[in-house]
Image (tube, rainbow, N blue to C red; front, side, top):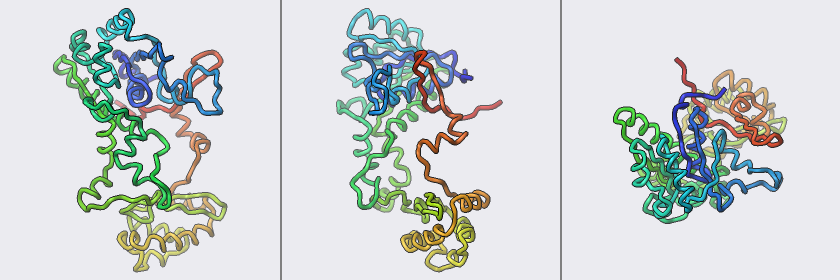
Length: 359
């Protein structure tokens, strides 16, 4: 059953690709009426055509498009035509939120800038996604931001080149930041009755998400290098081990207590008391030798036995799963949203509004 928290809100989505539509999806999931305006002249949102080689070429949308568009009313309009622009203006007069990702000059040229729209609706919340800030004209796709913000440089194996993360994470992060801004603006509007301009740039969202890696540089002048899944501050954390039945497990040991429990589970209790490994600092310093010792122990046991004992004793460990294995999990299945676009074509994606609110 669809969540109806925002059933009284109307959202106009003038954004395309991923970050902006992710904001629209969030409000749609919570019951808002979301009207997505797509460019009639270009055949709509460009991601409609971003299909995998194995997808049906005749399908109305790609899986990529479906991933971020659900339960939205779609209108194909050309905003350069006066009648189409007026149609959008009529919608905006009654809207609560408009989501855009135009460059500033494009928004002004189309008559969809904040100065124009707030004249139509002073209570409007105008949510803008930009690449490098509203004053920049630079084209900004996710991989560009991953490169510019340091993510690509530090991502990958030591022997690999700089590596993009396999999802457009900067878009997703920017969407989350913009949602927060919109929610704050909504709260303020309930107090004052006035609308707001809210902007998030992809670059700011990326840099703001560097977290400990940023502080490692700002405080210790440490430039993160490519170390694969390893953690620069903790060990064993991110190391991958193969079990006797050829399964891959990854560790996330954060305390010595967890490490000691792991060693007992692996039948090597003395390792936890070894001077080379009995503190986190020592384990980070000697992580390569530690990985070799742990791998020998993992190789003697089956994955299920290790996992069961680790879960029972609160030792952080995980199975490395592909997408098929992920969505065989009941918890993941519960997050799938379906939509029947035509009698023959069903789309699927995962929820983004996953929090629980209870009385």
